[in-house]
Length: 206
Image 1 (tube, helix red, strand yellow):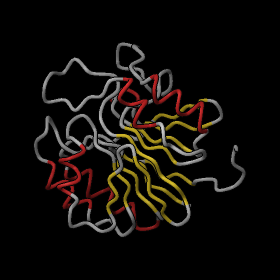
Image 2 (cartoon, one colour; image 1 turned 90 degrees about the vertical axis):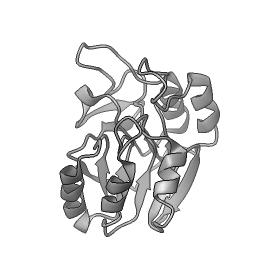
Image 3 (cartoon, rainbow, N blue to C red; image 1 turned 180 degrees about the horizontal axis):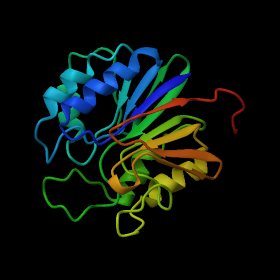
């Protein structure tokens, strides 16, 4: 299965138009949050993303809430908003978690979750899913420009417990377009340029 991975477009319509063009030969596109900026400008970005010719799996970032994203996607039958929930597309299970984990220092506009809240929402994640989270797991593609590790312990524990086929995330801009391995799972901080990924549908971990 061929995937288009992206995150953190932050109201950049030109970036979205380029992503739509790149989606012509993929099976599923995955948007790992931060479509808006500080809770503003979400709908035009979603309207542009609806031009993608394939199903799209989305989670909220911290720049928009899950509720805002669900409302923006109300009339989009091929747009699947996940938050403590999953969807199966072409036989592959995708499971998602929106928001920033742990809580950021950005204040009231930021859509954040505590590690405990994230742990509860990730409890039903099945084994061998494609896991889509806005925040990266602790210790993988989570370094900011100052070298600090800002990822989520809850996401990391879920990776170690469920062995996803792939983790798609964003949030930490300095680690965009990078990938690392965690417990045998590829972790991709997608970024706004986007990455085309050939998903291995072979052997899984029980």
